[in-house]
Image (cartoon, rainbow over all chains, first blue to last red; front, top):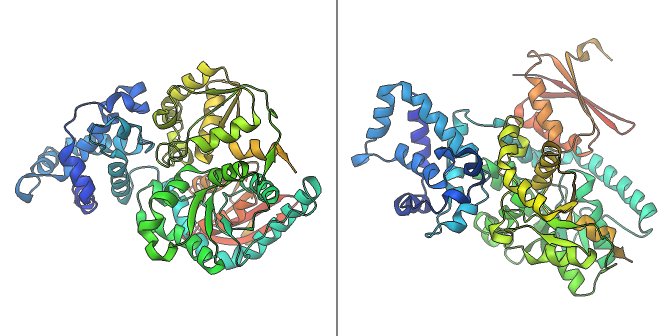
Amino acid sequence: MGVLTQLVQNLRQRISRPLQYYYDVCVRCGACIDACHFYSYSRDPAHIPAYRVMLAKRLTQGGNGSNELVRWYRDLGMLDGRAVEELEKAMWECTGCRRCAVFCPFDLDTALMISAGRYTLLQEGIGPEMIAEIGNAEVSKGEIIDMIKDFYLEQVKSLEARLQEEFASDLQIPVEKEGARVLYVPLVGEHAIVPAAKIFHAAGEDWTLSLFTATNHSYFVGDMAKAKQAARWIVEEAKRLGVKVIAYPECGHATRTLFSFFEGWFGDEIAGIERVNILQLVADYLQEGRIRVQPGTFDVPLTYHDPCNLGRNGGIFEEPRLLIRSVATDFRELTPNRELNWCCGGGGGLVAAPEMKEVRMKAGRKKVEQIQRTGAKWVVTACENCKAQLRDLNEHYKLDVEIKGVIDLVADALVL
Amino acid sequence: MSEELTPEKELDARGLQCPMPVVKTSQEIKNVSVGGILKVMATDPGSMADITAWCKSTGNELVKMEQGEGVFVFFIRRTN
């Protein structure tokens, strides 16, 4: 069985009702064309959002249940490879930023097609398997947690001791604290724990640090069963500890799973557990007077990049701006911004795929131009994926900027 | 070090943050023959959990892990 035939069979199984609706409703009006940062540099039809959907439709739909187009492709033989190549480009050279959806008069969600397409392609080994591999490891982490827990606790204790010396002698980093109000799920690495721990301490928050990390690479490759399993470890931890709030870190795609998928995946299991991003928590602390910051701590010209999955896809626009303005004197907006902001070009897991580097750099040109127009020296954002891409863009295009996190700024301006 | 842990390849992933130690490990293990050992050095404390979990999910064998002076050293046997 040819790759294309197998692909079509697999893809058909992923055609949900919303996807079928998108297939049927899209009239290829072209409103999405100039919304795509990939198409903006390539002018390649495979990067046009409506065409990406059309490609999949062409493959999966035939007359009277048969698939004449596929048969035609297959019979011609030589076109098989070309069709797969085009589909590969359409599905993988996309960051799932959903900027195209903002411009669609029918609100069609290209990212849903991309998700199904990616999953299907990877079944045939087409695409950056590395992203799926990291996703698999995230699932496995829950299975080996008892093996690595002691080591993790030891690392946290050592970090706590260092922060007690450097920041506040009574600072604590609780782990597995039953009855804590907030379960904070970090990223791998202390950079996602240190500023949060300082802010929680300053706010007097009753919190506990998760044994897991929020990232979910299975989501990037459309493997929703594994994405759910990786998230399940966190939900089980939250339930075991009896927390009231799950707080996710500065990570866009993870926050998108928390906001858009947890309810569908876990239903009643998470009823009564509030789900927030750390920016929302910290903005609340500031507005409620639970933390104080030194206004004007930073006078360097700086800008804020709205991560697609926090802003456009998560509705978090004002919290980061409130926090940045509370500590900085020269805040400059990117144009456009908020829901129309350009993607950094590294989303959709592409920063974890070494073979995508060249494409990422091209897809980041719009972002580079935006940053250059502001004259900012710092680019502040709230997504690990964006930070990694912005660092690469900074080096590649010699932007001479520094990349910062929103909560890094707040933590550095805290007044105890 | 016993003879069987003599690495066929070494990977210096020091200074790299998640998920790059795993990404580099996954790339480099392909250059090791089946049954051979890849030695990985990393400084990110998260690499301990990440590489252990990656070994479990890929089926490669984490033969040994050492810690010292802020460096984590992994000996991974390629199994497939």
